[in-house]
Length: 296
Image (cartoon, rainbow, N blue to C red; front, side, top):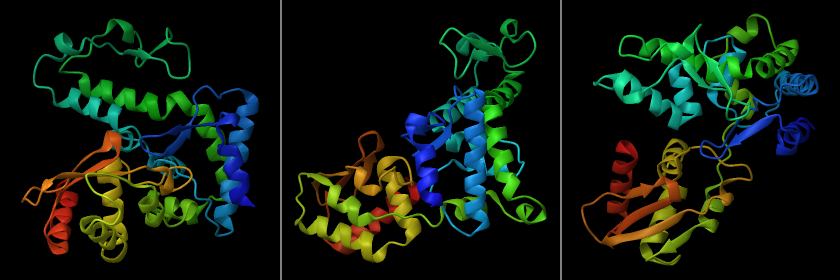
């Protein structure tokens, strides 16, 4: 029952959540701030809270920052990096930049508003539109921008959801959980059907019965741990999570990268493509895959 209700509430036609296809997670829709929407967010929090209270997982994919917020923790740049890697990398680049930030980035403490028309903007600090981002104040800019992205822009939605959840799950017991514990309780163990991934795979330079391909899937199914399988999924696609509908929705491409060599496998996550040389043995394939996953 809980799974069916939550699945309905998460559907795009309700407009409550937006699906991040890169990270395969759901996040609050900043535009859904009308009273009727907020009541639905509250209901969603109550339903998920009831599922947790009854020891039932609902299998919904939220970024870890949501579980931090449910526990009253303040979001950080690390949370943004996990929720929105592109934005996270951009802000990290700003912090690491060794030249003159003001001259190169040309930023002020005014940013585009989320959930409004393209011409709308918001000031991160008072008079932000007149204050340039410099080497001296860039840490403050990043702090305030993360705060806006993960808190202020969806404050009403998150507050309604959290109040619904805490109506059922609150008190001292909740403080015993880490964000990762809470994620496991709500989502349950990750259901990663690599047989479905294999069935959807396509090949370039290889074919399903090629010896290397048979070695590859044998390694994945029989020798890799669940953590290694997640690492492989992230290495090939950019995310260790299953998309809506399961791994069968991913059309991974395994491409021949020349004859046997000492090169390790490499990937193009934009196209979910794994490139593997035609190694001479299964043992060599396993060794090279492990190197790629460790340093990928």
